[in-house]
Length: 154
Length: 334
Image (cartoon, rainbow over all chains, first blue to last red; front, side):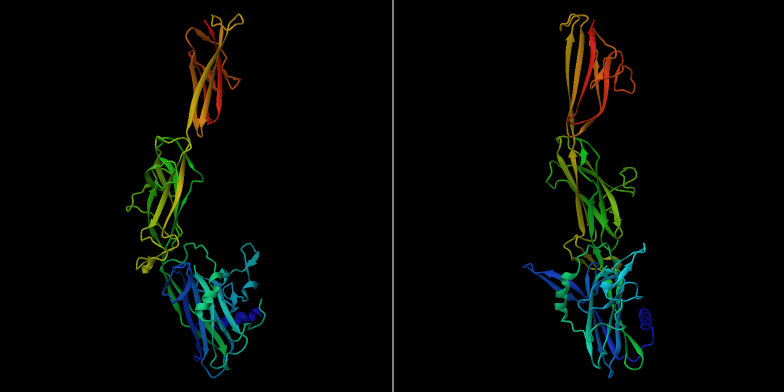
């Protein structure tokens, strides 16, 4: 099982020649700004930032669309965490994550991190190096969807 | 760890509109204290990729890349390094308080230093005389540390870097035992200070903006002195025993002098010594000095007492407030 996924990870490394662009993947990043109004109520605003500072909360949104006439099977979306962003959560989208640079994958509560002394501890959100959604059913022709995860600027 | 080769998620994700999503998860994010974090001026790039099979083998597609520039966050904290109130005495000069100033921002920043000695909440105002920037050894030495001149040699700190600052003060002469006097050291970002979120366009490291962080880009902490004074009072008494069993000061009578030294206050006195000349027309009784009931030799040696032919001397060393020392010696009337 693990070997299979290593092979899969290798297959989707960027730099390979792309086939006809039948599936579109659109990437948007928003920053959450919390403002407090005169009555003391907090409002969360999502802004499309050009600049951020450490501690900012980012929302990564991935929109996909199967523009082809064929269903897209074995659909897998992978997003390596930018080095300066710490993973926080992925809402209820339940992605697989990797905490070892993409070598092994699983749901975050099942992952462990090996310590330098040989022991292991439960993985924390900040350990996540990659986020991946793997679809069990094909995306039908014309199908669209949206995925999200959140991170914090380190 | 894996449950299925491809799985873990349903076919179609449907998530609510972005704004309500954000509200739903806003409280789940930890409000973590940031270390300096990603260096100002660096770029965060995000790209996702997808792979799929439309019947002709695995195909891959990359998303667009989103680049975010990291701006400079201005944050600084000041911490008093003195674990407790620093003892001082009335009129003492060059009284030392130690602070550390830390750049919690993510860019190199210089900080202006100032002090507040009249902040209230204490009994007196120490008179701040100098601020020194430590040379790195953490120990104050006016010869090797740098005298601070505002605007001329403001400390420049990298992200996460700290510097030790020494503040020297004079304690006013009129303070009483137990009085407290506080001094706050203030460090303010030279780029600017203000409410968190205040932005200084183009003034950040790397050409971006500088944004005031949660500390307001200035920090301060308070150090305190406590006056620890002590006073010494001496009470001398004499008991005469004459050769006939009475108490008449006649020739041949023995006078036993008792000197009680009482130290009062929260401080202590150093190098306290009791010296008493042998009165005229009397003779010192050899070997008669006692300290706290313990006999002392007349030689100037390892014990506290000595007699040099004209006076007795008892060296008491350091005596803390609330303690007493009792010295006795005898003479005979010539």
